[in-house]
Structure formats: structure tokens, C-alpha cells
Image (tube, rainbow, N blue to C red; front, side):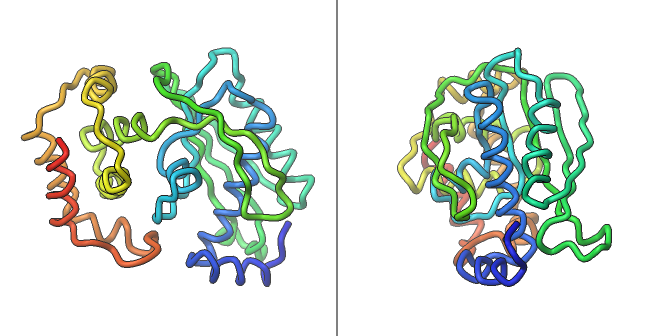
Length: 250
């Protein structure tokens, strides 16, 4: 486990708060442990996949996966990951929940900032979806920021499919970070694939309507600054500007 002094340097270099720097360290350790155990059975996706593989300038704090092969035992994968981190001096515990087509794990760790109090434990959520097969997956070599973690292969969702899932998230939940992530991908030249978007929405018995999409975007306006404050590396753009640029592409 890295020392608190080193974490201070890392937080400054990555422009993160100390808590987020600690979480970033734990996320990379967990990714290594998870993919060492699961291979291609899990597909990495969501905001943290964008942050780690597509240079998203927004810190993301959860690990999201689609289960690519039904035979994978998520509980076993999590327990193996906990043992691997324990070997590095990072004690952790997990609480698993299974419902519908999702398996979620809540993990608590005694990380570099742990001082003996429950409040100083680091929290990481792992979310696994069973409801659909991924459309666009690719194998990527991940080179961790932290020297104690070796490079390893990750199966990660393609940018177009992440964009499609982010569009679905606009309909299904009320998080302003989804608006930002869509804008980020569009600015990087990722074009919305309407067939893929419709396929993703169909899973939730929805279909795309630009009018409804615009309304759902606007619902996030009041949450934009509170949700993204402290997560963006750089200046947070104006919500109206982002919304207008997103809608131009649909």
C-alpha cells in the first residue's frame, strides 16, 4: 500500500481531492485484481472506463461492468480481489446485492487515509449488469498510474456503445454527469449510432424522441454544478452550451 505522503503528491499531480486520489488508487488495484480473475467474462464500461481509457477529464468513482459470460461468479471475483488487496496491506469487506438483472457490491477499505475511524474507510461500488449482451467490445492493455501495479489486459466497451448507454441513462436516471459524458464523447468525435441507441432503449421499453431527450437533459440543469463540482479537471462548461451542442448531434 502506498503511503499517505505519496498520496498527497498523486492528488496534486492528478488534481484530485485526497479522498478521490485514494479511491483512484483503489480502483486501479481492483481493476487489476478483477481482470486477473475474470479474463474476458466481464466488460468494463461507464464513467470510469471513459476516465481510464478515453481520457475523460471527469473523475469517476464506481466500477461498472456488463457480464459477458454467464458462468462468471461475481461473488468469487470480488472475494479474490479482496484477498489480493489484503496481501498489500489493504483490508476490505464487501456487501453483495442481487436483484433483477443486476449484481451490485459495496466495498469498504482501510486504505492509505484510514485512521481507525469508520468514516475514514474508503468506499467503492461495483455494478454488474446481466440484462444484455455487449455490442462493441475491445481488448486493451492498461498501464496503471501506480508503479506497484503491473500492466494488464482489460476488456472495455467501445466509445459508441458507452455513448448509447449514456443516452439511455438520460432517460432512466437523474444524474447530470451523464450529460457531461455525452458531450465529452461528442466533442471527441464519437457520433451517436441511432440503431445502437434504439437497441439500448428497447431493453427498458423506451424509444428515442428528440423532444423527450431534450426535456430529460433539461431536468439535469439544476444538478449540473452540484453533481460535477470537484470532479472536473479544468473549468466546468456552461450547461446551456453543453445541452445545445449535444442536441445538435441528434
